[in-house]
Length: 253
Length: 356
Image (cartoon, rainbow over all chains, first blue to last red; front, top):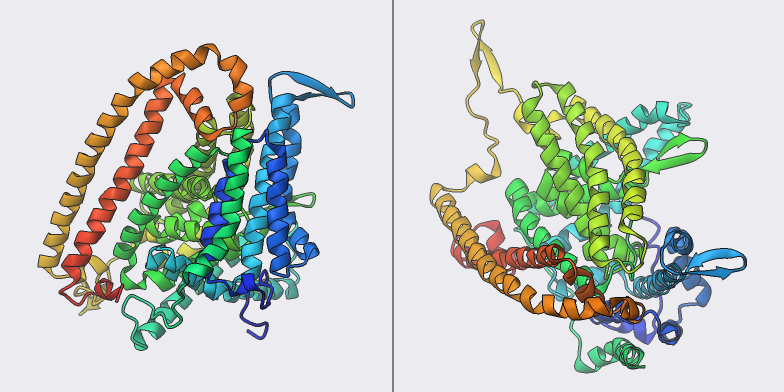
């Protein structure tokens, strides 16, 4: 617990973007991604404009470009998939550098790459400017069922505990000379997973009893209710609105 | 297998979103029935477990390794409803926090990885447990088969979603072969790990395995040298604790909900079946110049949707069906929820204080 209570992706700061109520940010990011996904892929310039918009937000939130780019690495598997696409797609072929590529496949690859990257960048910006607790409050404000929010908050709170328990098991295995090298060692790993499940479940029962003894009756008290003023909403929704303008232009041009 | 933004077109993403929301609403109710007010901490901790166990690497050979997907494991260990919830919450958090899987593709991801795997795995598992002889070994065998089928089932579901709303022109045959081929292999790995893990849990705490709960032996006491059944345990399942009157009213609520959704389904399907006539005409018009127009509008959300499914009446019917079922489930459970909340308002059950 000494590592602080913020998640690893959060970047502490006091920028105007950090200060926005979480549900406005969530709504803005979701609307932005929806707009991006419904933009026609032929309007290449529109995606450039979206990227500029996101860069503007990042600058406003004082999130350095290097930080953002490093987080974008999560989509590498899909980049590999997109690179493969021009080779397997059908339709008319075009020769590029001696390779016969499918035009549709190229468009498809561009489509997935551009939209996927923008989506990831938007979520990364959200995660790096919003604290976990705030994020959960925001989800609750956006009318996600309270039970689901509770489950999510327990998962987030105990995620590190469980992962730590798994790490301790690994250390215990390794200190007894175990090294997983192949399929033959799956039995041992699976026993660890089983033990991890039992420990998690029993911890859940203990947590429940602790909650009951503190007066839990099905709902968590919200002591830090978040509200957003009209100005904050309009400030947060500027991003999707500008994006919507770009999208409409993309369709009409 | 996390689908990013822009991979599936907007209308299909929206429909799968509705399906996912409906399924989550149903499983929220189901989980509360399975776990009572222990739902939040237990489902939360199991979700954390799934999240952690996905990071546990199983070495295959020559430096490659795989990891568990967890849908089948969750279904067998904690039951289908809680399982759907746990995997969905993991996916939701992965989407929002770690940008793993697009936000607009959340519906696709949940439908595919949380709902299909869990439901298929649990159905197969229960079926096999009923058929096979009682015992620990058959639990292991059943969980192997359930997991081996659940992963390719998710691949098939993904291929279907892709067929309806994919944004690229890779032929459906190629996608199906690649997806299902790869996932049969992944499924074998998943199955071995799942079976071993379930076996490990059954050996230590068989009472924790939801799928094996009817294997529990009744407690018997040896009194004066002969075995007698112990009096009923004080630990009663959640359903039995509620008074008879409450149970009866819940049954009428179920019936009301069912009738409501049936009526809704009737209306929706009426409108759905009225539509194709108009749409078929558009299809005939569009079908002629499809070749010329395809390129410009291939990616537009509505055009793609219109052209693609309307040339295939069965598909458009199916899509309408999915929309219908999704809306029905959502509307039905909303009505259900509202009525239930009002009913429970006057007794002091834990759920009644939920929104105070």
